[in-house]
Image 1 (cartoon, one colour):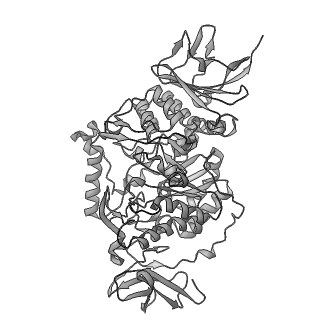
Image 2 (cartoon, rainbow, N blue to C red):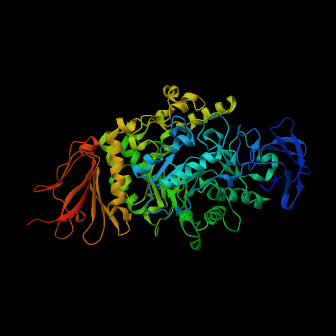
Image 3 (tube, rainbow, N blue to C red):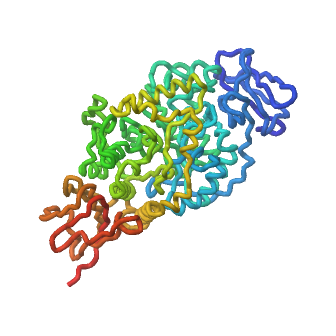
Length: 612
């Protein structure tokens, strides 16, 4: 925006004539842009202003929406709208930003978080989320995508928040009010591919994509080939854009293993991290990577050859927890047993696989985690992918016993990593989370076939009898069934209280809130039982005793981690079997007959002074 007009600028190398078409009035007007350096075209249109609709015409073809559009009011195939970000009145000048330590993440899909599926409706829930103990909201991708509903991972206008959830200022208001409630907001962004419908980047330049690499979704982004400098700048600017113009507190990068850069200079991921932090202008932000092969280089500092991210999702802990809760270890759960030692190792070391053979993939998996803080691993029981990667999109509490589910929840929320909840998990939502995407009929057919093929890696889901169970991703009912019902905060009050109290214990207890800073260790107590000891210093340790199996009478008990601090005895601080959580009560674990550990339970012990 400039006084009295708007400056338009677009990258279209190889084009000889680029025009901006001003639309929305009775007769469109056409304005030719002048060539500039490096394949850009630019020009000023006097009389244009915020709200002006426009598209670009390239050598007489088009018109096409702006690749860097700030808003697509009628969807990705229609005109772009000029947005003036300076008119929004922010009130978060005292917001200090967020660093990773001490955070509790909450992944949410705006379209199904509320019945209305809008930023405004989600904004009205911020107070409840803050009271629960959430500190950072992680929204699934919001860049404009085609159709009436979708997950957002097929975005095609990376700078334009989708019209489905409201206008750009509605997003800004959501962030502004989240900050007022004491919560940060980070955004899931997709820099490994663009969606198949509504993607006009190729009309402007053939250099945006490359066939040198293969992703699960088609051609990769060209970060290291011919004319890659301008392509890199487009995506680097996008990472900075969300931090700067929407005051976001960080980014979560999707499937970083499919972001390829073999150039000799700064890796594109490292450059993205640097540019995002520069955009924050000294305010701390959080950068999280999803990386299926578990490459810890992402979270090591640049001076050690790393990319400077803050955290990585920890699939290993999720997978072992799912085996524990469901008893199934087929498909990509094949290399997990849900055994006590897996929990101990995941809590102590983050990833379980750090270079060992991984039979499911027939190759080695993972890299070393030595020297990394516990907090760099984002731990979860549920996320959008893992719930939907099933026959019916069921939440994991419906796939397990109540006792096991509560015990595993305690492990995840008290472990020294960074915990993440998926929306509705806190009150055991009865609604599923399915894969949904509103595409053209032909594309929808391919999506249905692709989902069925993916789910067939589970032997039971490959059966003919299961095909009718899978929800149609293109059906509006599939989308509607996923919307949360907040009345379940009341009707499922016991599990809601369990999550609230665990987050309070994590936040307020002087040992748990250190996230293993003074050390953490563990021991196997039985076939399905184990303990985790959190060292607090000054005889102020905590003991988390977990038993997923039958009641265990541990006698003898030749395990030194069970011993209380000197001149202390153990007392119960918290139990998953407390009546407030629908439990049946918890008797003392240490008795005259040695240790008696209840089954399907997790118990937190703390030291108290010994009696005479």
